[in-house]
Amino acid sequence: MNNITFESRQVALRKGEHYGEEYKKINPFCLVPAIDDEGFKLTESMAIVKYIINKYNLPEHWFPRQNLKHQARVEEYLQWHHANTRFCCGSLLLELVINPQASGKPVDHVAVENLRQKTTVMIHQLESYFLKDKNYLAGDEISIADLFAVCELMQLFVCHEHSLYEKSPIVKSWMERIKNQTNPYFDEAHKIVYRIHDGYKKISAKL
Image (cartoon, rainbow, N blue to C red; front, side, top):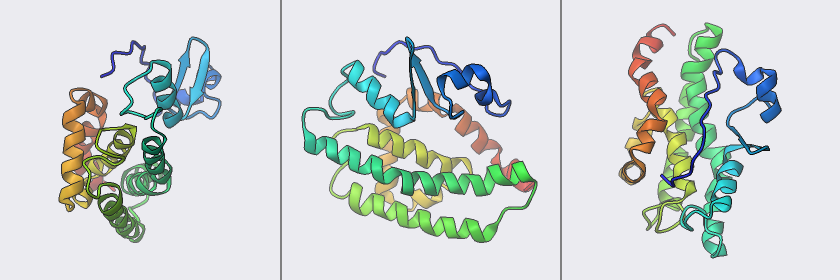
C-alpha cells in the first residue's frame, strides 16, 4: 500500500513459536507483532506503525507530524482504543471462541451478553463522537486510527457478532469505506479472519 519492502515471517502461535528462544530475542514478552529492522527490534503494533511512518516519511494523513491538532485527534482515538474497541472486540472473541476451545467448557452466556452491551455502547461512541460530522475517525482523511479500529472490529466478524456494528449505518459505511480504500491489502491481511468466520458455525456447535 505504501511500497515498503519487507520480509514477513509467520509466527505459529498454536505451536508456541512465540515462546521459542529465537523469537524471544526479538520480543522478550513473547507476543506478536514485533519487527527486527536491521537489528533494531521493536514491539507493540502502534509503536511499530509510527516508527515506519516516520522512518519512511509516509504521507501526513496516516499520522500527522506537521499539524499538532490533527496528530492529537489521531492520538485521541488510539488512546481510547485500548480500553474500548480492543477490549470489547477481543473479549467477545475470547468468550465465544478461544476460551471455550481451550478449556472445553461451555460458553459463558452471561459474560457474553454483558460484553455485547458494552460493545453496543462502544459502537455508539464511535458513531456519536469519533465519526460525528466526518468520514474518518480523526478528520477528513484516512489515518492509522481507522486501520486499527476496523481491524479490531473484524474480530466481531470472526464470531458472527458483526450485527453489533452493522446496526449503525454510519459505522457500517465507514468500515466499508476503509476496506475499499485499502483493498486488496485489507482482504489479504484478513484471510484467516474470513476463513474462521466461515467455519465458526461448526466450531460454535461444539461449544
